[in-house]
Image 1: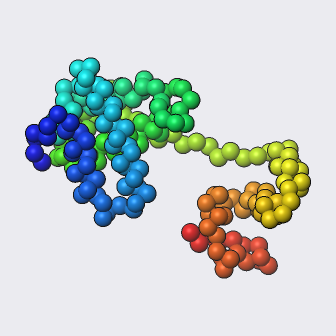
Image 2: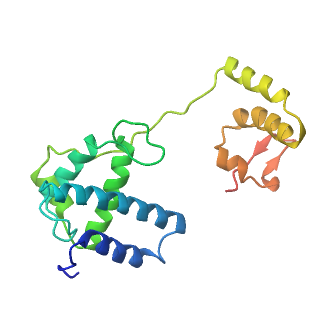
Image 3: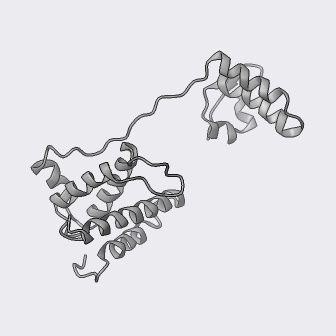
Length: 194
């Protein structure tokens, strides 16, 4: 990996990394990784311009640079079209950290491992598991009452979903992509096909 990448080494290296992964990742995964690397590039540029990290070149980033970036993510305000204030949540931090680890691995940079060994006090972000939200009987009754007034095809679909979805435990995507062959109405069994 060349060490001299001009004035903007992070985007150049990220582009090479994405090009290398193009045929090895699903399009949706690749697009998400591209967006994550763009976000990281903005954060790296912000930290480099304020001299909080030593370099913007992923091949030369140090353990101290990684620790500074992780600290920045804990305090950086959320941004984007759906941001409603606050700072990045832990799941978002973990997602960005995972993308950055992949890029540094591509550059043969061991800064992440070095940080874990020489700076054990720096916590790496972990994904937060959000509990499953379950409606109580009153909430289900309100939903059923609301869809009873709906007419036409959308009303039929809404009434079906309000009765079917809570009883199955399937995710919305699993219900939406369900094949008719995977539903046994008489035995009341639904197999997840997708």
